[in-house]
Image (cartoon, rainbow, N blue to C red; front, top):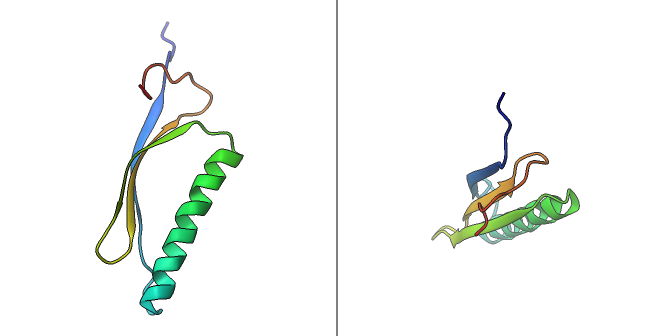
Amino acid sequence: MKRVQAACLKQTIHFQLKDNIAHALAVRMVKDEFASYKKLLEANKTKFKIVDEKTQNDGSIVIEVKKQHGSYELGDYFD
């Protein structure tokens, strides 16, 4: 019999600018979307750690995030 002792997802997410709107507005929308994403994780009580966050030359944001998978323990994934 096997059991999962610890589980974690590592994702790279690119918050991209929307096309056909003013650049300044698109950048603001990306920042708002990223903030909403973090709030959603917190509201869902998902344990997460943003490992890397980079703002690209065009204003878009790329993050690497580790987050809890389901209700499994995290083990030493966040260390």
